[in-house]
Structures are given as structure tokens and as C-alpha cells.
Length: 159
Image (cartoon, rainbow, N blue to C red; front, top):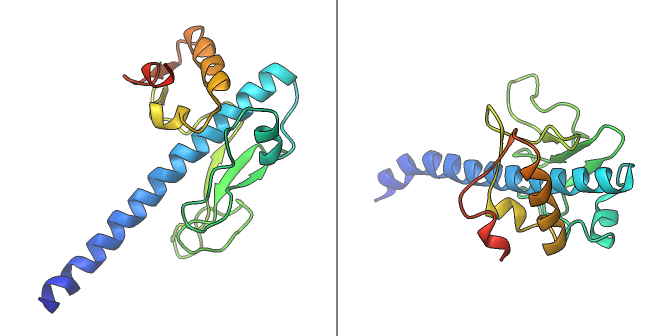
């Protein structure tokens, strides 16, 4: 029994790390979508994540999956980030440390969404963090943009 646990522990840690990274990708995309909508409708950057909630672009501030606190956001650099596996906030400046270990997980909020090539794939989980009317607005924008692909169920999740 102990040998099996000892052998499986590293694999389980990698699974948990992968799950947390995937949660960051979803939450960072929610913030990026909200920032893009805010920028397109107000012609300026959102000053903070609470501003996106107050203005109705986000239903709530997404939590960092590596700590029980909000994701970090810098409107001047147009970045959102997580403290990452090391749990230390490096200001989103050094995603990979000198040892090659992942530090902060960083995503842009300037319209270059975290995306698999060749285009953005938005799924219902990513839209879930947006307020209902903002998600509907995003869907109307995507109809005009061939670079954004809606995964099956994203549109239906808003109905």
C-alpha cells in the first residue's frame, strides 16, 4: 500500500497542477473577454478588476487557483496573472524562473486571448464568468470575427 502511494504521489501532484493551470486559463480568458468588451464599449482600459464587476462586465472577480485571493491585474501592461505553483507574486514579470520552474502564470488582456492556434476557442465555462448581458455582447462580436471559434455549447449555455 505505501509503495503504491509513494509511486502515485508525484503523478497526482502533476494532475492537480494541470487542473489548476487549466482553471487559470479559463479565468484569465474570462478577464480578457471582459477587458475586451470594456475597451470596445468605453474606449479605455478598465482600471481594476473590481471596476469590471461594478460596470457589469464580470459577474465576480475570478479567484487565483493557486491561492484564495483574486487574480492579479495590471491595466497598463494589459496582463492578468496567477501567483502560480510557487505561491509567490512575481508581478507577472518572470513567468519562468532561472531554474526553469514556472513562477507566475501570465495571460494578456489586450485581445490576444490565451488560445490554441489558429483561433480563439471560447467555451461555456469561459463565458460563465461574464455577466449574462456581457456574454451575449461577446457572442455578437464573435459573429463578426472569423478568428474566434465558439465551441459547441457556448452559445446554448447562455439561453
